[in-house]
Image (tube, rainbow, N blue to C red; front, side, top):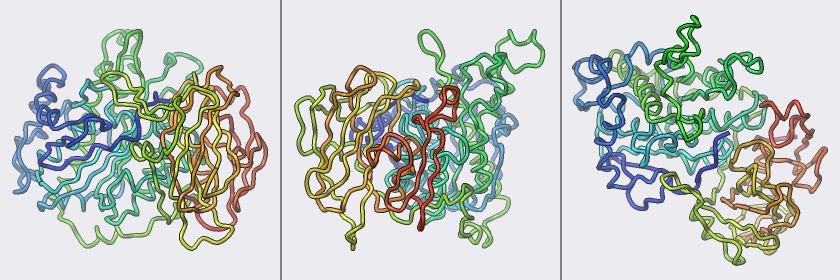
Length: 566
């Protein structure tokens, strides 16, 4: 899994006059200030491989030198954009085009001079990790800048909602916070942060995210951008029988094919360019075209983040797909069929009974959770644990057993009956070192069972985690978090990141890393909560070494008597 990075600062959003720059605070997820935006074109040029993009890009028709097709639109402005690869090379990364009606509607708006709303949802790669500070060469900024410069419009809304070490489960619960309600195009990048086979809670959360986005008011186009992580094991290692499937790209590909979305795969694009994939052994000692793609660090290589070259290739792949859609609309203008197809109801969920919730969730994160803390001991501090030059890592942190803080939340539920409950998800850091246990109690205005949560994990990843509880509705529900003496790591660090509230109690078991039994205080065995029946089983030693084990549980069956899942 990716290392934890700051989640709940404001997402980077820009308008055309900003040149994809962030106005206001430089504590945004990408630290994109107006000064950085002004330097963006020059900085981007410095990041080009070889200093100028190479001869291949200069001969590429995608550079804008050919005035035909979509480029002949009066709303398209020639730019100096030069892709790093030839179109026929980038074409390898378009694994599937999907059904194009929604994307054609987005392209039609650009070609007719209308503003568009675009959002990128993903992890630390989308946030900019791996690109050189101040991250002006990250793929997300390159893509948004290309839209802004090629189709300038002061009313464009271009949003980068990349958050390091954050999986689909958070975005599924907080999609209204992260994606504009009027989005025309949404790009997903989650392959490094999601995990598990189809049917596992995390994959179910991703499907719900896809369904929620596709059902936004504008019926936006959505794209699965699937990053491929380099295996930690050698290609010849017997423990890696199928290197091609190391990152399980085909699982997100299944979602793309089921919902007829474009599938842009870095695995397919890069594979032929690695030296280790060459069929002739003698040729493997020669450098491969994409050997310089992943981020290097002192003592090794980060196989889960692209470097500056990698970010550029990712951006070029997305832009190439965009240009193909634009070309299609220029050659075959929008028809009534496109709108009819975009409005067509979604099919049943691919994973059984995996319906998205009709109600919205309330996400209290970042400065909002800072303000929600109404009392705290001195041991609790609002701190940024980020490294210099990297995105910040804000949160409430304590390492002192017995120390506590109190949050006051509006957990009201209109027309709630006496048996109604509100689901609260306490977002905290879970990591393999330093972390301890904490309790959550309802102390005033609302009532709930005492919840014990553990921030320690056995796998070497650090990631946002949700501890779940059910509370009675209240206009002012006061929660008390207390650091406990008990610890598995030998240390007691607790880091609070936020709280998510949901009217739908089905949200309770929607996150993969939640032990349902913890809600009722049982450490294992079946749990029954608000109409849900769930069973869990501990992982075996063999399963703990595989991607089949999450949060210490491998069997995770849940059914609900009536209604839908969030």
